[in-house]
Amino acid sequence: MRRELVCSVVVAVAFGLAVIIFAPLRTAYQIGGDEGFELMKALLCSKGIALYTQIWNDQPPLHTALLAALFRLFGPSAFCGRVLTVALASALLLSLLRLVGRREGIFPALAAGLILLASPQFLNLSMSAMVEIPAFALALFSARSAVLWTETRRTFWLCLSGILMGLAIMTKLTAALLAPGLIIEIISARRTASCFLAIRPALKKLALWAGTVLAVALCTTLLYSGMTFDQLLGTHLAGSLREITRNNPGVNFSLGMLWLHFDCLLPAAVAVLMRTTDGRFSTIRLPVVWFVTALLAHEFNRPYWAFYYLHFAIPLSWLAAVGYEDILARALTEFKAVPSCLLARPAAWLAIFAALCAVSSLEGGWRLALNWASIHEEKSVADHQLVRIMRAYRSHTHWVYTTELLCPFYAGLKVPPELAVVSFKRVMSGRITSSDILAYLREYRPEQLLLLSYGKYDADWNAFLRGYVTVGSDGDFVLLVSEAMTRSDKNGTLHSSAAK
Image 1: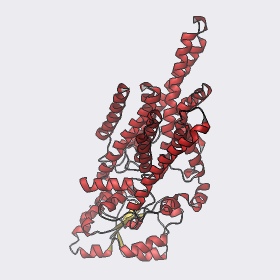
Image 2: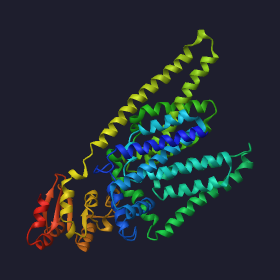
Image 3: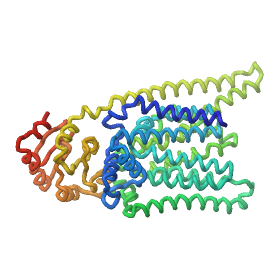
Image 4: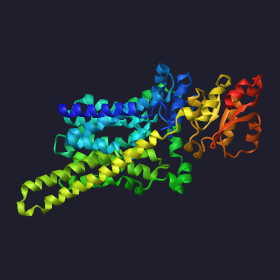
């Protein structure tokens, strides 16, 4: 047991250190698609602007609050946010290793960790300043505590599991995908063979766990009085959003997406089949319920983004490792049980094991190498022309408006808090319109605008834009500054330095 713990800690720490040392966390302009939202929200919070009452936000507050606290301590930087994610990714990996290792042993645990590292999206998410990894790191710690409760029956572990799940959900609501699996684990953990005698204490334990989850959510709501569940859920569950995205295959989930990870899907299916037929399904019940819950959630909820694959990758990695273990164990058992003249069956099991390992090694290794290479190919902040121009006008700028939030973040500039999250979901659900944005711009009068080069604007927008002049473009975006700002620089030094 101690060897398994030490090995798990060493692997998780080694992963975190390798990413911090070798990945371009300081220099990469963007690693994850939602980094701009998270970094800008934290920057505004660190400046004393309140979440929900001032900053429009459709996500729970804990990640933003923690990142804002780090910004106050160390100064705002993408590196700070990415290191936080790396630390929590290491914690997630440690939790998975401990969950698998506790039931299956150290080698299946290490296999699960390697499979997860090579899964689609995990490497990018593990170093991106986004909320998916932090939420599921806490959720897996909750699962680990729940499993410890089923083994020891110490109430401390059950309460800790509830607290951690509450924190996970208050980091991102998608962490609740793990909750049905934990509920079933808690209800199923009974010492007596009689279901009738066990149901009452099981429900009491479930009520205690659910109560701690709700207590954390209630405390968070009291701390952030402006947070409403309409704001958290309304944007994501809006019927208009589902209607708009229904016929758009680019944002819809399909089962074919799982086949992109076929090297993990096949051994996972073997694990479910073998554990079900030999009466050991309870040992894999948690990852199976998690996988089915994620499948149903993404089948009915839209849109589906690529980074949501993490919801499948973790339980599939767990199941795949079990599949490899069971195939090898079956081969070794039959080698011992059958006469030497009947070695065809164990040899066939060994061949299946070798084939699956070869496919997983080649496909997973290639995917891991491509992911690592793509991260290093990201454009650096120093090479971003528009960031340099925005910085040149920084001393005369109080507000910036753009949907490309990383540019003002790297320039050390703020956006109007109501416009910190002008996301696809917010726009498509009707929570904000072009007229609403223009009304906020007239209120704040931002000195800089960074707009899409191919954007089309109505007469009201064009009238507003007449007060700005173009100072830069990178093909995708065009940067405008107010005419008043350029006129205030009588010697033209600011404008000429920006043009360089």
